[in-house]
Amino acid sequence: MTWVDTAIIVVKTVILLLGGGITYIAYKAYRRTRTPSLRVLGVGFGIITLGALLAGIANQVLSVSLEMGVLINSLLVAVGFAVVLYSLYLERG
Image (cartoon, rainbow, N blue to C red; front, side, top):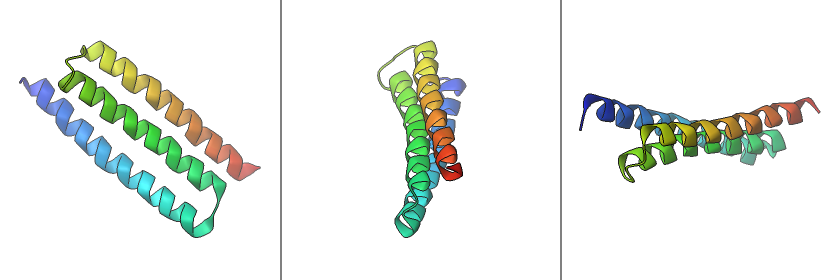
């Protein structure tokens, strides 16, 4: 294992913890307020977090190339940000 592999594992773990925390807090806020935009916001951050997790698993466990891992992560981050943007639009409407 190279230092890059170790760095990827550390960074992906931090992203998983932070993204999971944001998703959990958004879900708790939704349950308290029943505001649909908070539910969608939580889903968006959940997708972004899932992207980091899947890319890390694909690269480290399944021996998928780093480029494919970055592509998987980028696709899910783009979808997650689109969902977050939609949640902000819901709040406006």
